Length: 67
Image (tube, rainbow, N blue to C red; front, side, top):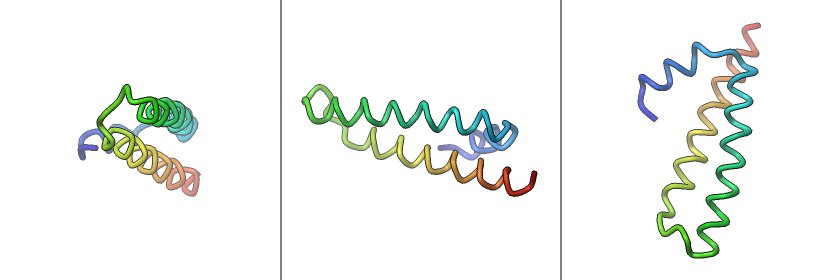
């Protein structure tokens, strides 16, 4: 995730960030299923989504602590 994208995430509310994380969680599950069935060959795609979800959750926790 690029620095510009992280700055845009910091402007969002914690609730919006948690919704984004939940949506990414669903995409991660779909990605894992595609890997197992052989439709997806790129293993790094799921790893990248997991990293993005971790960044989003970290920013959401930081914001909740400030509220």
